[in-house]
Amino acid sequence: MNAEPPLWRIIRDSLEAALAAGEYPAGTPLPSEAKLAARFGCAIGTVRRAVDELVAARVLVRRQGRGTFVPDIDAMARLRRDDADRTAFYFFHIHPEDGRRVLPDTELLEFRGAVPCPAWAAPHLGLAAGTPMVFARNLQRIGASPVVLDDLWLPKVLFPGLDRAAFAGRDGTVYGLYQRRFGHSVIRTDERLRAVAAPAPVAGPLGLEPGAPVLRIQRVAIAIGDRPVELRISHADTRRHEYFNTLA
Image (cartoon, rainbow, N blue to C red; front, side, top):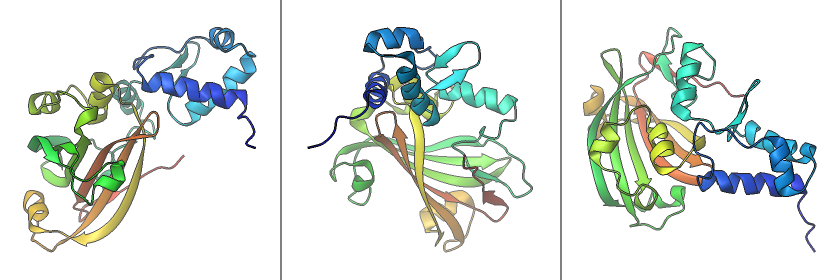
């Protein structure tokens, strides 16, 4: 017979479900610990343990003297960039080899609003092959140099109405668009890296000869509720750039 989970875990799961359902939009504060304790009929310390878990998982963020908030991905990125915070580039890891941290300029090369999910991609998103997907291809430049070619696969059911104009005209990052318009707050990414020979469709946009060595990065973006919302295949030219990531 399985033991009942501790109350703090039940509260954590309940809060995470509420966040996934959009009960607390990006940038808004969570109710105070006292109000949450009254809502769940428990001690404040029990609520605090649950909230601590969500803060540690980056689902929530604490602001000293102001309370606990649902993070706004783009707002946090701007603040961190201005403060030169070490986590400013939490989702972008390609940097010049001289150590500078520079955010790229992005050009949308291709957008398709309804394509079948390839069989190789389906398991990474927990989908069946052929499931309708949104596909986008971005070229990212640092300075004048093309550095990263991104192919993004998004489950269409999670992004109703997303079209080329909305994707290309977003105000902020792709993950900020996912959060504000569709309620999917990306809290982590799972990545796999390996060196490969660039196929011709990759080499061309990056200004390389077919077969040149590139870094292939496979990323699955996970939103609140442990839901995969994006599969991204990136190819990076690392002749003058390198992959850099701080783990904390």
